[in-house]
Length: 283
Ligand SMILES: O=C(O)CCC(=O)C(=O)O
Image 1 (cartoon, rainbow, N blue to C red):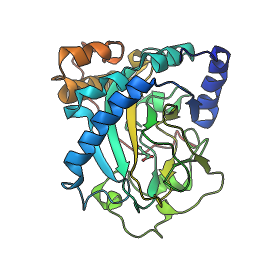
Image 2 (cartoon, protein in one colour):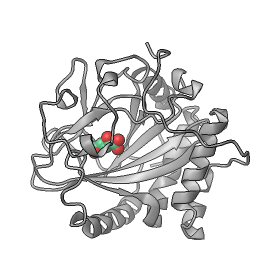
Image 3 (cartoon, rainbow, N blue to C red):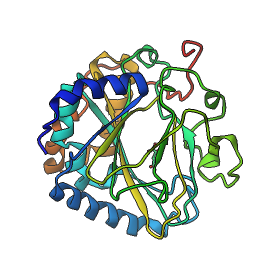
């Protein structure tokens, strides 16, 4: 558990910076995994019928707002310690999303999730936003593992011209010949073990394979903003407002588990408008 492979951390940082992702192995205790699964499976049971015709491509999506039991995985001290050792300090939490692909669920389209392309930090080597994806089951190509396009967090790609992620139109897209569902040169599969975490730069294009198995395949994506204090004041103001709107009513016991990643902002700058498209500074 306790990150034995400390000497690997600088290379994880390098990989995250250069390629846009890294994987930390064996970072979730059995107890934490089981607690998280209980919460996740309850959320899926509650929402599966309500959302049966929505979000065909990603699968069922449930935000963390009503699930304070997720505080254990959100504030996972093993991963926070590793991030600090990698030099990614001062991480602020925005939200987590449970994403569950049912048996037969199609591919998830290629997309990047950076929302703050107006912030100069988005054109620097330090990611303004990262994802932590914890899979609840082992994943493979067969049950819909993650696919990535390494390097696209810092380099323009034809996919940047193909529309916005997570609109109802693309989430419900049934035309798998749309270019956002195709294969691209340089893409890589990332099969994962439950108990590991993949950390990715939100600016990097990612997608998934279809789920050809008979079981659901579920991930929790957690969004952090490293070096929060160095972000543009409008970005900080937005993250701060969003966090409190979504999680401000979590009970004290849950908030105390995520204390280290609660965004702290006392200015009065107007929150940013989110912008999912990079400008000409990305080449
Ligand atoms: O479902 C997955 O494995 C990937 C989810 C994803 O792309 C996201 O949370 O942005």
